Image 1 (cartoon, rainbow, N blue to C red):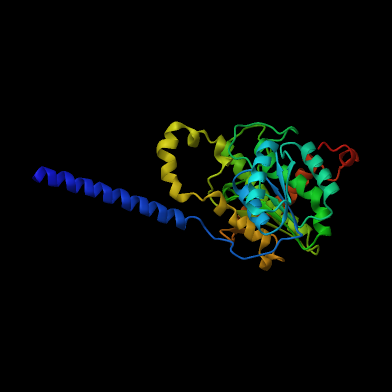
Image 2: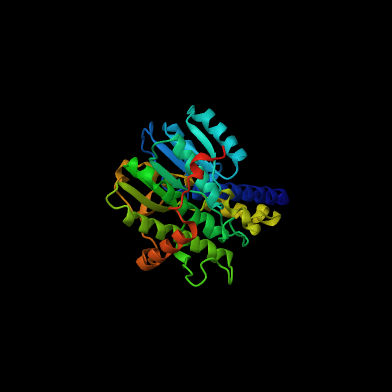
Amino acid sequence: MSLFAFLKSRTAFWLSFTGTTTGLAFFVKDLMQGGQFTKETNETGKVFIVTGANTGIGKETVRDIAKRGGTVYMACRNLKKCEEAREEIVLETKNKYVYCRQCDLASQESIRHFVAAFKREQEHLHVLINNAGVMRCPRSLTSDGIELQLGVNHMGHFLLTNLLLGLLKKSSPSRIVNVSSLAHTRGEINTGDLNSDKSYDEGKAYSQSKLANVLFTRELAKRLEGTNVTANALHPGVVDTEIIRHMGFFNNFFAGLFVKPLFWPFVKTPRNGAQTSLYVALDPELEKVTGQYFSDCKLKEMAPAATDTQTAKWLWAVSEKWTKPTMITIQYYFNVAD
């Protein structure tokens, strides 16, 4: 009888422990989801571009804007995935003004084709959300010979933004939203080896590209003073998206079985990861706020390296040299591939 009582109490203990642990995990998960953008806004008549919009944060950003009536262009590398995401969003929101267009940020030619086609279809652009990114991938190059993380995360968006500045100014008040990361605080612009030709560390390259996002944002905001076009950067949080696909450790069997469950309470869902993007893009109170950095729907202090004016100017000059945003030949307007 005493043995039975022992087993019974032990079972009760483990059931109680499991229930308490599960409850605590869900409580922590809820706390870690961050700020929410809950204001009701009507975006009917406004035109948006969201890069990297077929999955994760970008997809949830498009979904929310579509619910608010906005016209949204999903700028994606993979058109098949983009169309699948678009169909889901259109069916849910009943907003037919959501479009898929190919834009591979690892190809400057693709970016120029996208911009040329967009200008043929739209006369205005009210919000550009530079959301797409790659993270900690093995060293590879864009089609233009730029290290992939720097090329996609910074150079591609630098070119895209500059090619669209005319429309953004014409459509003012308008906004540019650059999705950066807390990783920018660990970043350093390697002026001696910006393209990681001499040595490559995937973590340092990623942090460098995210610091470049914030430096670009601040310099852009200065150059746009008086135009009623704002530029801000943000950290979306640690979000469960496909961006970690290159991090082999998180994708192996062991991680799936043991590590991911431990991290689960501390990771945002894509919907919650999109909240700060929506806040910076849509909140009426931020219409004139520019050159700032946000996280969890709040203004946050950026890293000291992100306020280095000289480095920002140097990076801008190099970015112009590598992307040549002012060189739009007439062929991009008349020979655009559909």
